[in-house]
Amino acid sequence: MKKEIALVLMSLSGAAVADVRDLPSTVLSCSSVNGRYQSCTVSGGFIVDARLIRQASSTRCIEGETWGIEDAAVWVDKGCRADFRVWYASNVERQRVSCESVNGRYQFCSVPRGNFVIDARVLSQRSNTDCIENETWGYEVDGIWVDQGCRAVFGVDTVRLD
Image (cartoon, rainbow, N blue to C red; front, side, top):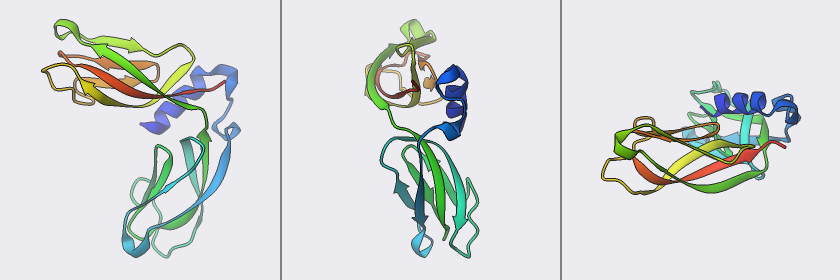
């Protein structure tokens, strides 16, 4: 989902960012020691894309299986050790958004124009109906949606690409 959002961000932002490669980047080394899961963080923001540039292990590093990206980190597992080029958005803001499904109906709650949602979570559920991600609530690049009676305050991470 993160890469899909990144691509939408690029298309919605117009001239602000022509290509992911126009964003700041750095090289990050990450190693799965003794075959264990390891998360390696990048200071400075939300990772938009990552590419394996040098494998240092005899174990194959396969995207989605033994390595991937998640928020501000690259993760590795099952013996993968490698260097990654990571591109990131450095201006991530945390916001609180209240959104309510009234009478069980779908409701969309927008974030301010020019902000793009990159992650969201329930901070405080305000309904008797469970708020379950991708069932009764979710997020799109421009806001939060709720349905089937879910009412909650959401923690929303956004980025501006200007």
